[in-house]
Amino acid sequence: MGIKHIDLETCNGCKICMGLCPEDVFRMKGKKAAIAYPEDCIACVMCEMFCPVNAITIDLERMQKLPLPY
Amino acid sequence: MGKGIQQNALSTDVLVIGGGMAGMIAALKAKQGGVEVICLDKGIVGWAGQVPTGGGMVTVCESEAEMENWAKWISEEGGYINNQEWSEIFATEGYPRFLEMDKWACPIIKDTSGKIILYPREKMYKILLCDPRKLLISIKKKAAEIGVKFIDRMNIVEFMKDENRVIGAYGFDLDSSEFRAFVAKETIIAHGSCNYKVRKLFTMNNGEGVMAAFNVGAEMLDAEFGNSYGYSAKYYDTFGRGHSYKFFINNRGEKIVDKYDISEAQDVYYKVVSAMGQETRKGNGPIWLDLTMATREEISSIRSETKMAGNMWVILPRDGRDPIKEKMEWVPILTGKQGAIRVDTKCKTSVDGLWAAGDAISLGSAWTGALAPGNMPGSGIPFAVVSGFRAGDFAARSAAEVPPLRGVRNSEINKMKEELFRPLGKKSGKDSGEAIYQIQEVVYPLEYNFFRREDRLKEGLKKIEEVKSSLPDLTAKDSHDLAKCHQARSMAVCAEMTFRAALLRTETRSAHIREDYPNTDNKNWLKWIVIRGNERTMELSTEPVPITKYRYKPEGSAA
Image (tube, rainbow over all chains, first blue to last red; front, side, top):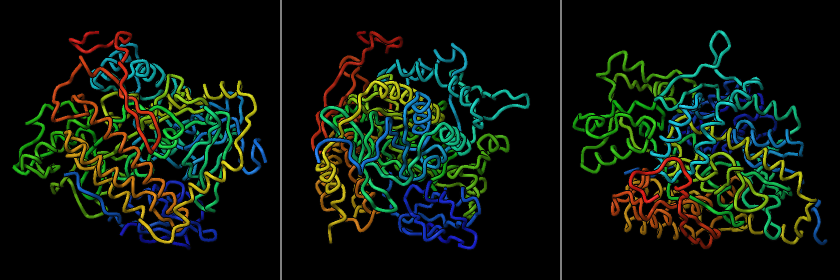
């Protein structure tokens, strides 16, 4: 399912997730990050890995369909 | 209002588009040249680009013998149509640049005595390691200290042109959705190549800069080699160590390394992809990574503890998968790397006022010629650095000589706004995601873009043209959607360039495999394919590689 959850208690609003998300999944809602476009998450886990307060949880399943190489 | 710098356009001396490694280095160098610099990114400057996704591996040549061996090797692997001037620049400037960056407190891995650790590799070059994330942060800090201005969340999709000179760029703010125009004496493209959103970790680069440069008349080169493939665990899209393919088996349990001449292919991915594809075609697929019989020493040689997003040893255990205990299916995966912008050795494009650095350059990663970029691990970061230094330095020198700009008419700016925002006004139409998938259906399958043949290339091209003709129907409900509409546009343009050039090159050369022309033709095809035009019409022509000027020549060539 890709991005699952942002813990709003923990999120410090640093915007790093917005800065490195390759698919522009996040927007700020007030001073916290919000999941705005979950259907575009490719589960690259960059946001989860670099979130300084571990507020983001990702499921590894990619949401976008992809053709096969052969 | 007549011509003049527009009040609603931000003005600077040097505008750098892209805040990854190449862009930030270019911005920093330009600022050191004493001019005003804005560096912007659609994400956040310093967090963007491909460097944070990598393992921080940097290829450098330390000795003169290594430089020579490397330039010779890359010329052989690149089918002798690499630009050997650039090969030499990459070989000689890489290490000194990292020594310079070391003085900026960049986090390069050192031994206890403070000396940079260089790992010898293949006699041709060495590897140094850095923490890629910290490296970007340290460069951003240095750039901020000297006064580079940063703008985040700015999506640039076209350039501003006055007669024959690029004088800035157009785009929109992803958060506020506002249209923005920038006026600049010199503009540096550093927004990467087109990777077609296939491989995780490479999906932010969709060729917008390549398309925008093409639309203002910049020449494109080597587009046929923008078909870089690697390999990864199916579904998980992970990286393994380069030589993990030595444990690939087919469905009959045969090691593919025993069946193909790929024992030394860890630095040239396409050879492994070719073996995987051939086995699958023979009905021996799928291909598995089988470590169940590997010795402890063998496993430790391919285990990597690097904290990087795609590391298989980090990702797979999260899903309860253990590659040591179970064999896992691996597949070829497209990284694309279609960056075809032609530059001279100063990083200037064929259009005045427009420069390029990093993966946007034809073809990033050390101008590897017929070796699709991205095929050589460890070349991405040093090429971003070497080209960033050059682009920033020469663009700043040029900006100092340019008289104040006249700008363009407000009516032209408004016309561009209307053009770029067109999908927002539509109530119904085609979804950009659908267009992107249709392009992926052509660029990803090996039968179209790896094992190439005239009939299949034509079929692929027809499908790309169909997608292109549907682009005016795209709709967007907000800035996020609008960005995707322009990504579909640039992906279609980049794919068309690749397929047209691949059709024209009627020979096989390194990673360009034409099944209907299986031999390398040094008599007729020691040539570059140049593309001119714009996204509506493309004109292809050829230009002889100046091989007589070059040091390394193919055996038996007329030169």
